[in-house]
Image (cartoon, rainbow, N blue to C red; front, top):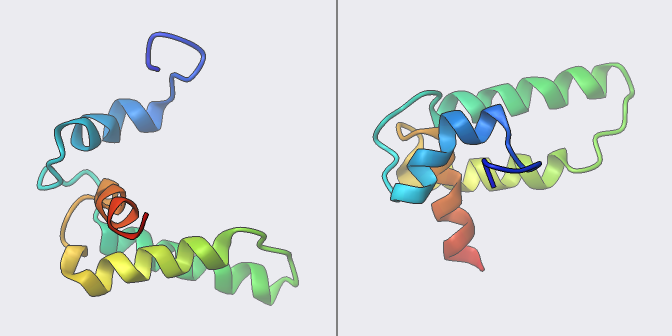
Length: 85
């Protein structure tokens, strides 16, 4: 993916963790991402803006945090997704 049109900065930063299935190399913690998603949702709600997918994202990241993955890199959400699929 990184050699073609699917190349993204997010995959440059977080992709190695996902490919290696190791999430201890924390670039941005799942707990901080959960907090930021919460802040985004509050801001959008305060400004009466639609947040089409944020509810699912919010629930998913809270599930990861509740599963004890909060101190891991935010890419650990990959593990949560594989556990629920």
